Image (cartoon, rainbow, N blue to C red; front, side, top):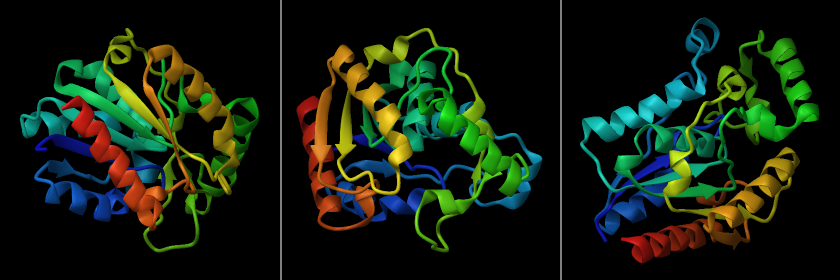
Amino acid sequence: MKENIVLIHGAGVGGWVYRDVEKVLKYYGNNVYSPTLSGMGDRKALLEKKITLTDYANEIIDIILKNNLTDVYLVGHSFGGAVISVVVEKIPERIKFQIYIDSFFLENGESILTLFGEKREKELKEISTNEGEGKYLPKRLFGKDHPLIKDMPFYPYLEKVHFNGIGKNIKGAYIDCLDGTGFEHLEKPKKIMKQRVKERGWEYITLDSNHTPMTKSPARERLIEIIVNLIEKTS
């Protein structure tokens, strides 16, 4: 198993969340990339540059093109799934398979806030205005108090994407983490994802874990097993 794999992290964290997953996947001989998206916790970038979802997708595309990667396996956790959904629309010829971990993908005309619903959209806008100068979301929203958890740019949540639907033609799988404690706001988008996964004929897999399975045993080992199995079945 020697494949090209790009791991995309969720909101408020960085590529470090995949440290152990990356280590094992590399042990199997794969080329693995787990970049940290720009502006994560960098207050200057958060406040002075309108980083968008498309910007994040372009960062991943840049990695793929600069390294001349083909038949890429894209793995996105939480917010990272939205990034994947843009990447596959822009360079479908480079992507072999897409894997979403407790995540969500967008369709034409949608923003992340569209999936969250009006109530959560209003809450996040108020939080950003009151605690993030209207430009970022505070790190308290993304997990326990930890120095590696950072503030998150808010603009990516607002961008409505415009797709032609090519991404639907790239095969994929969805991993649903069953313990949503602390992330109840994901219940609505995850229900939408479950229906879309069924419509697309993708594999739907449940994982006995909280929202971040890559950071703690035994969920991490089970997650790695799932990813490896998906790759082996499609390589």
